[in-house]
Length: 198
Image (cartoon, helix red, strand yellow):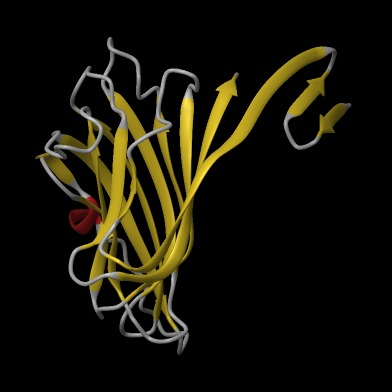
């Protein structure tokens, strides 16, 4: 029998497991060029989760991208390698089910890298999901990340984007930014949580 307390502490078969989530900060878009976290990413936590809530683009047919920094956001030029898939289905229920690995894959790409593709800017369109960054302060290993995003394609298609990758650096990652490839972020929030424990 398992016991869950406040959504954080789990006791299972006599073994105590702790997974402590803490909200560190929230950034809110208001016709913003990007949403950025330049503080709060430290060695305090083993993992950081960034929750995307109702992210809405100003411009139609844009990609959602990210980049990380080791100098507080002065430079976002670290190489990243990732693999991913894009699954989709149209509103009419047709057989438009595809996997586009090539759109989400990248090899040693510097600067911004794609997490979601071809978002629409219809009034009711948005993007939701999360991005997880593992051990950003570790100076022995490269920095792993995983992202899961649901979005609305500009041609009325439901899309699921799943990527995993790594930042090819053993330096301390201490800043991250999210933005669209063109135009501003009209509205939406990103919450940054720190996770400690096992």
